[in-house]
Image (spheres, rainbow, N blue to C red):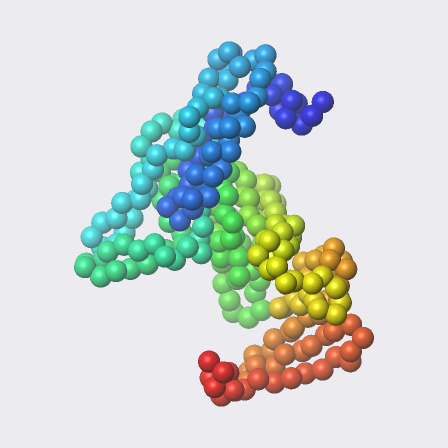
Length: 273
């Protein structure tokens, strides 16, 4: 039995609701359009039962807003009932193009406005999965000195507010899920979509060792670079940046070539810029 048929033989846990925040409206609209079309095509014996009420809808997007006071402080508002819903929140924390006014001055939106909507749910939804394409605070994932562990704290805060499952793409370090071991954490690897996008937009790209090499910009991207190099059948290398006050030193590791260092001074970078 296909997977979709098995899903239709089970009772839904709750009605489906989708909340794409303003930072993720375009992607949310595409997901909503896909869900509407997919569910319209499904035929099953239970569609008239009470548990499937609201299974077929013209849109699964829940109307919300995040108005602001004159001080710039925000509040989340959900404009319809979400009691018993499986509520999927979508947020793009890297979308800094959104602005609002504070005392007549333009200010850019904070990347953590999704907290306001989660707080507005007030525990009424059945489940709250959060879809965050770029994992919030993921760049600060480990402690090497007297530093904050922002990603771990963010994950714990989200789950404490009721988020059951976090879905992200290519997390900077998937081991951050150790901060919430009893909650769901999915990091989708978009390597196929990455290669597909490059091949669609670069007509002169040649996939062979004479014209292409996969380079990892740092240690964290090594696994991704190894995978891409194996799929494409090309060589792989790595840059390891070492920052100093006066220069940036790169360690080059390339197959068949002795490991070496080269230094770019700050003045050289400024001249290039």
